[in-house]
Length: 184
Image (tube, rainbow, N blue to C red; front, side, top):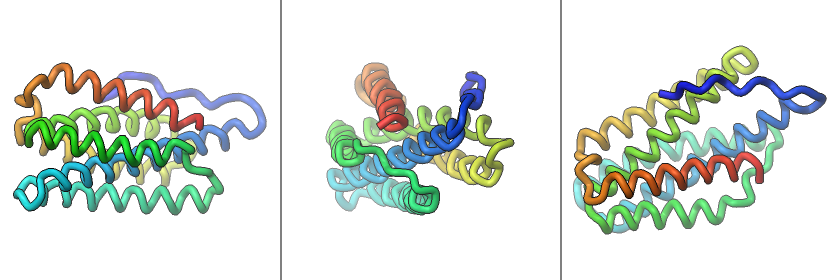
């Protein structure tokens, strides 16, 4: 869980709207990438039982993505210009880790969901008073991400070959993608 304090509101006219745009843009990008990660994993794993598990997780991520699609339109926020890159990178990450084996695919899920959980926690704290409805939705999404993470750990995510290095690379990449997606 995140120990960071929520980001204080920015001063100035339009600052809160700009921050909300960042939040919606990055969350949309994250859910888009998550759907693609699970698609990549399924493409490699075929009809293995684990692929069906990933399909169920992908379905939940698709619901999140659809909600952010709606929010972007409703609030007139443009998606990140990096969406095509994140779509490709997500699929490649999912397929690449699946090629390394089921435990590596689960490690990917565990690390990504851990980063996303912390990110959602920060946003929930930030939005709790300003936009309690959105904060509540993010809390629901966060709980589902935690369930994905916990499932991945239960399936042996930490037993993946080279887990420490794999986790560090994925964690750093996710954090960089978050910062980039907020801004562009």
